[in-house]
Amino acid sequence: MNIKFSRRRFLTTSAGALGVVAMPSLSRAADRPAVTHGVQSGDVTADGGVVWARTDRPAQMLVEVATTDTFRNARALPPIAALPENDFTAKMLVENLPAGQDIFYRVRFRDLAHSAVEGEAVIGRFRTAPADRRDVSFVWGGDVAGQGWGINPDDGGMVTFAAMRKHRPDFFLHSGDTIYADGPIQAEVKLADGKIWKNLTIPEKAKVAETLDEYRAAHKYNLTDDNLRAFNAEVPIFVQWDDHEVTNNWSLSKELPAAYKERNIALLAARGARAFHEMYPMRESISEPGRVYRRISYGPHLDVFVLDERSYRGANGPNLETEYGSASYFLGPDQIAWLKRGLLDSRATWKVIASDMPLSLIVPDTPKGGSEAFAQGDGPVRGREFEIADILRFIKTAPVSNTVWLTADVHYAAAHYYDPNRAQFQDFEPFWEFVSGPLHAGTFGPNTLDNTFGPEVRFVKAPGKDSQNLPPSAGMQFFGHVRIDGASGQMTVTLRDRADVPLWSTTLDPKFA
Image (cartoon, rainbow, N blue to C red; front, side):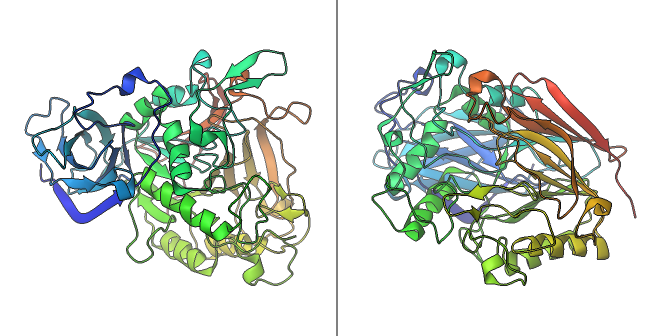
């Protein structure tokens, strides 16, 4: 096996100790550097992936990789530093791996001040993308630790991650709201039936995140959950972000609520972005450091186009412009051009467009009546909808076959079929959009549907207007599971709840040129 460590070394960050939470599974010898929050892998392709870990002091991250769990003939990769400037996190791009292969990696840290002192190793695994047309499966969802629903050991912690892990997916597409930086976690929450929900707590989550350390701590809080760490060690993540990595419904025109002492939204966004990039095993962009949107190819059957609908948007205004301009930006012209090039270039059977917000569900931005998402209400194309119309028209005329949109954000599960015969704007081919989540947050919905692009609700599971913000213990936590059959190329999409009960499923036949 020819395995090479890339010379591009990706250092990440995170600060603020988690000493308040007693976690026996994270215990360590005080005199040796530890892996403090488990291991992660991500952005896995046919020949490589990114490995991430965090330690508790200035240290070198030591990584070994092998094709068996015995680590026979393992390759030791050159060490990289984990420094206080980065809150002792590091991530490494491992390249030249064999395609379609289970890869086992072992991570430990060596104390920078005492080179003979090394900590215990933690083992993870991932599967590289196939070179042949074998079966591929993955899970997706979003929205973690929102609305004050944190880690409750009495409820089993973040149970949905345990349910997803059972499927042994090739990867996990995280659709955003990876944290709720604007959502404090209190020790207790009184439920509607009078019972008490009890959260594990840390000092940094007692208030909204404003400092870099507080943003980092919000990510680290999630990683104290046993289910999530076990999931991360076995399932690579393809991650994107949305608003709660900074604050609710943020755009550069955001008027912050009174809870914020720091009033500069651009500064908060910069801190939130840095913590986000530090805490996930993403491949980084040299051309645009900090870029989230990217294409990840996972074998002949699948390309995933991860969008960023937060960084380039205009202000959250009424979204009623009758001509496309900067006020209507959501993806922005550069990202749209990138998406078109990628779709046109793709030879994969399926092109999954990972959108952190739904296309046609109305998501208001109160209190001024602004629009948070693409949709602004029934009628012709206006405002941000110009971008969707442009993309859909391009997909039709190029032509690009077999596109599917996956999303989360609205905290319920749904399947939408888009039919031009039902639409105000009709210059597109029919397609599906699937919605899942929350993974571990309050359950809401359903939202009002905008008819501009002719969506039809084929399935919905939501609490209804009289039962909003249900806790995870109510059971209405959702994830999506996708399986692509290697022989036929058929895609089966199943929406499931946190008990792993299949709620609805459909099988899509691919079109071959």
